[in-house]
Each structure stands twice: as structure tokens, then as C-alpha cells.
Amino acid sequence: MSLRAPALFVGHGSPMNAIEDTPSARGWAKIATRFARPRAILCISAHWVTEGVAITANAHPSTIHDFGRGFPQALFDVQYPAPGDPDLAQQISARLAAFAARLDNSWGLDHGAWSVLRRMYPAADVPVLQLSLDIRRTPQQHYEIAKALAPLRDENVLILAAGNIVHNLPAFFRTRELAPWVKAFDDFVTQAAASGEDESVLNYAARADAREAAPDWEHFFPVFYALGARRDGEMPYIFNQHYEPGISMTGFAYGLAA
Image (cartoon, rainbow, N blue to C red):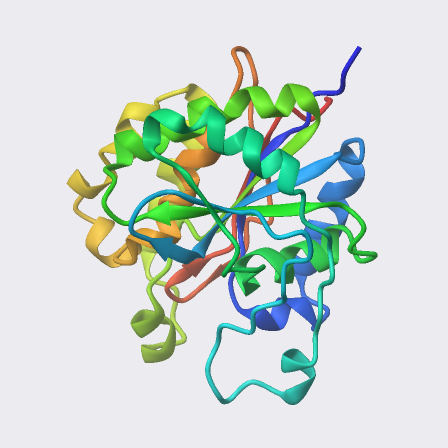
């Protein structure tokens, strides 16, 4: 019997989680012990936005340091030399033919992917591919892409979506106080994930607090990829429910054993 890999959403936060001992980093390491080692990982990161759907197809994806000055050299020195899987990339491209998905050899692994993965799999010995966020797609279309990807889980391919449920950097830098909309919006998403109310999450922009809580669509849309990859009867395991001004680090996973 083949293993079914989970579908995860993680709040990835600052790239410093890759090198600092933080509660979120410890949570990522712990969650990886809750399920069998996957044969490959498909990551949907907030930090790869394209026109059209793209899948990394390189055999040796580079480690992309996609953040500005002000971070320590130790962070720029990090390498995550996980292999790619060109054959799997071809299969995913075919699976997403209805969405005109294309293979891409120009991208590697951005910090939305490797900052989390180096905590989950520090040996970098599990093949990793990335799927881009198509800027032209609606929430419903991203959700449909996720549904098309869901059967990969039955081939022991981990679906790992990385963004943040709440992501408002101006608010993060503006104040040290935790505004009530941070937890309120985070609770809205996690409760909908538990109750299967995907439609309400797809229509998140209608909420009065969405402008404050989720102004950066690319950080919120990875949520749809975990929701869409859920299988019937699965309940989310909520973890890393940590809050900062303007940021929630919450993650949720479908398909973990009780």
C-alpha cells in the first residue's frame, strides 16, 4: 500500500527562522516527525509569482537568497542543496495541462521554501520542486489547481504551501502592539479549515479586516493549496500558532495520524 503524504500550510515568516532557534523553526522540525518521509516535496511559496503556472524542472535547483540587505552574512551563506526531480516535474506539468502549466529551469528554491525545509529535512536529501503562483488566476482557480495536485499525495509527494495567513509588514514595523485583527483573521481561516468552509476562505476579501490582515495576496493564496489538497474526512492539525504585530505564523496540516 502506498503512503499518503500530508498537505501542509506553513507560516514561513522571516528568513531568519532558517538560522535562529525560534518557536516556529522548532515547530517545523517537530511536524516533520509526525509523518513518514515523503518521496518528494512540491512547494508553493509566496515568493515565486509568475504570469502563467510554472514548475521547476532542474535536477539541481539553486538556493535563492531573495531578500534585501540588512540580513546577516550567515543567512546569505545558507545553501539548501536538495535535488530536483525532472521526471516528476514532467508528470505534474501533464497533470496541470488544463492550466497551461510549463516547465521552468530558471528558478530554484526561494526562502519561502528552503527556510522551512532546512528545519524539516536538514540533510536536504528529499527532492524538492516548486510550483509558482500565477498572478492572473483567481482564488477559485488556484483552489482548482490544488485539487488537481491532490492525487500526488497518494504517491507520497508532500504538498507544502508556504506563506502567512496574516502578513502586513507595515503593521509589523509600525508598532509592537498586537492588533485584534491578527488573531481574529487567523482564527477565521483555521476554523474554516476545520469545518470545511472553503468558500468563505476563497471569499476572504469580503471580510472587513482582510485589508489589514491580508493585503499581500501572494502570502495568503498558498492557503488555497492546502485547502484544495485536503481529502474527504481529513481534519486539520493546527500548529505554530504564534503571533507578532501584523504577522501570524500559524500552520495547519491535513493527513496526519491522530
